Length: 336
Image (cartoon, rainbow, N blue to C red):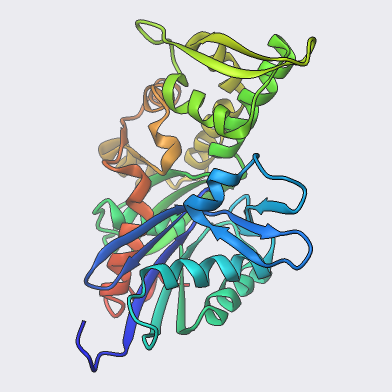
């Protein structure tokens, strides 16, 4: 970095589960959990991101861990601002740099008030100029789709808090469907299932590990097993259980069905000409949830259209936001 270059441009994918930061000309510089650990009495921040995640569900009464974003929107303003500010500090090498421009992506189904909140948080974190972009649009740009063309593209972005489905053409979102079912809901479903059917209490992080390692949307061949530590609700004692991928699939049935139904609803509302483009080009899955085994196949059998998982689906949104940041003039029309 030149001594006289005092300003930097930043793109942020502010997610319910993870926050990713892209810096102009440097690419993706950070990917950390969107979580903050605070001291309960004076609300002083003790840790953020990865460090705070290690404390999550392991804290004593003086410390609490907060995820400031719920369902893709800011639930706790002060903590969200602190999170953005500190994550940016982590990647800003020098204290005298200012942020000239910040592009932040937000869920497409977000209200004006919620948009305002994101904008304010970004400004308080030091950005002079803030641009907002809808998540599915950023994801489409991130995986290299030509969003300005008069051709229909369908994106299903499954994040931590929300699933955003959009049909995009001519640099705009034609149809969008946003549901508050994402990776977190899948974790919660696993947690509830084992509590109800196996009298086993597990933590959120364990639920997430089960989902990642053996979770699936369709039958696996061979089926997988995982050993899980939790608390037996009858005896109250920590136990180890072996859990099969069939059990996990059963647990995930409802939230996966909700995602499926939302894709169908979106297709039903799509104008026929754009529909025929989607028939040719297929549906693209992005976001962490796209990595659930067999989800693409399940959707394919339901809608009878080609369905593809984007490569590196986790970073699609931030890559797209970064592209917009590098070429703001070109992508003027996609910004909100």
